[in-house]
Image 1 (cartoon, one colour):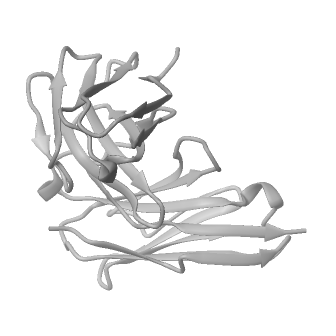
Image 2 (cartoon, rainbow over the protein chains, first blue to last red):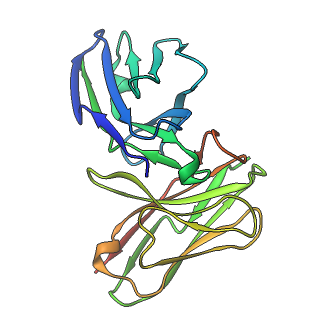
Length: 113
Length: 113
């Protein structure tokens, strides 16, 4: 079945720096890749997603890139702020999992001021 | 518009007790999911229901049962709780089909002694 690997598991940056989180997936049929942000004790919330017919998508300080040939996708956060500190999860959707998503294990991002 | 509502928010059980976690969504979504979240393990799919009347196993179904009561409600049952089932349980829903974002509830924090 699908396997999603996420790196790094922890990431510490200074306020104003950029942060990049990378994910790889195993099923070449996967075609939907969302990113979720989870603050401590809260629910995961969708922050951006990309579909396989698009190579890059931006939303203000957040961008996601997709390389289907290499089977990896990345989350880019520019001009980081302390409120960006959270756990970020990538996920992939594949028909093998029905309508479900397969999640990576998460990246804990800490932004220090 | 409440989104996805989970009850209870917290629960402590003794080994061997049974319990049903409730989930309801008011977004007219067709698909619903149950995940468990453990430290360092990300979100792991327990069961999902692609549409009313169907349920399928996910990655970690052992020790759990589910019921899709109607389009709005999807319950998760632990028949004989074990300490290994101590976790945070999240319910989620999505519109239908593949490649759709999932919306999460606030979670149920379950401890089994």
